[in-house]
Image (cartoon, rainbow, N blue to C red; front, side, top):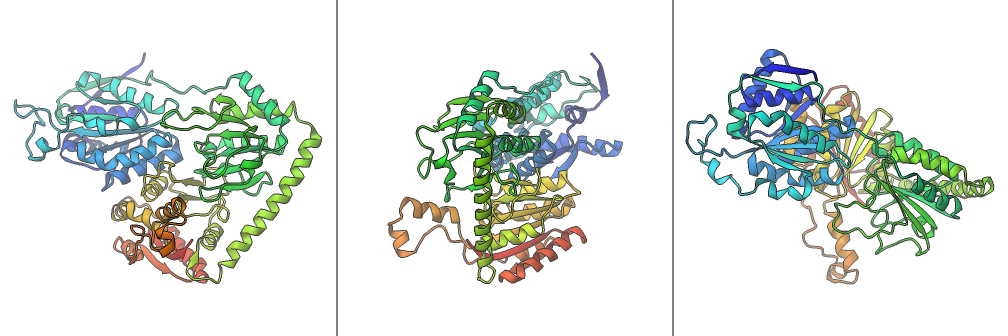
Length: 574
């Protein structure tokens, strides 16, 4: 087996060398006293002209993990983040929950408070915080949301530990892992490290479905009068989009995107019957007699709308039961445990063998008519907001859609209405994780821009999401790392989710009757456009609907031509 011996001076230098050999491009970090040997190792890399992994300073841990999240979404490669011991881990836990629920492989590392109080070891405790920051179980605060956690104990196990972290993070279903790095171990002097090149810890192995289950599913879909496909995440693998189109075409099967987190299906296709949201369950759910759920954790809300009891349900995903969710009670008549990009083409062929052309053509005519009617209604609703103030969410989405294209990536955290801003191509859209760790969007957009520097990146955020994103840290990272992107803040001065939940649970309660909803107002609203100006960016407040198209053009001009970050503060209402 080929090996490579690398000259180093410390375990920290050996650690970075192994990451470089394993293809890690970026090292997202928020440093503390535990980083001393890591920083020294990066200084040696710079002196030697080694450019990978590239140290990316991010002045908040939540933002660092969110940036890694966005970078992975573009590249498909595992990411490395390091934070400061217990306190840094605590700041990042919300972002790790987001990574866990979206199967994002982050090698999440943290220093460990020095173990030794004395004894002459390099890296022993020498600062007041080294006592108070130690925990009995540092990993305990996030163990439920990582696939594995470990503490590096000896230099001799370094390669094995790094490879173990990488293989478990990338093994399906993917997700974050946690590695603790004690300061004394990182500082330990060593003269060389010998590693296997390439690693013998490969995990790539496609998850193919049980052929019998494919045939069962095809039989159900072919025999159905009103079959339906519901998906949320399938488009995270771009090749799966075409397979979904092929399946929809084969049987004239309608497709609903439920809380879409990716571009899953072309919105201009006649089989695209619309979007499902918490407040607006799609009627096709209740009308279907067969439903194929593809990579979707919450295909409908049983308390608001659900399929008929006799409707057959097929669940297709690597983990079709979402086994890491404590409760999920959706029916499953046929499970297909496989990667959708692998299973869908097989299902297409099986369906084609069974369908009658007459049934397919009749269903196609109905779908075409419904598609046209829905789009006409949506267009009318957006147009009705053209002359209303404050700016309506539907009009705002329509205006944003007009300035996007295949070379644009939209990163959305809550407000963007996809009926009016459908993503044009696979990979052009990503939305907030279903876990709802608020503040993800801005950092994820920065990571997206870092990975896709040739693309225009637009972050669409609610005002609450912008506040939670630690905006000064995000704007700082954008300027420091030359990541010009356009941020659009939908500023309606409130927590919409809190208001909606209150009125849903208590429709006849005091809050509804008095039109007073405590703990939900974000007024008086800050001048968000001034924050970006403090970081040499372009900021503009937009209050009238007819001002928005021009403001978007000015913001994009700053981003594309001047290479400055930009922010538009949209005074709006839902």
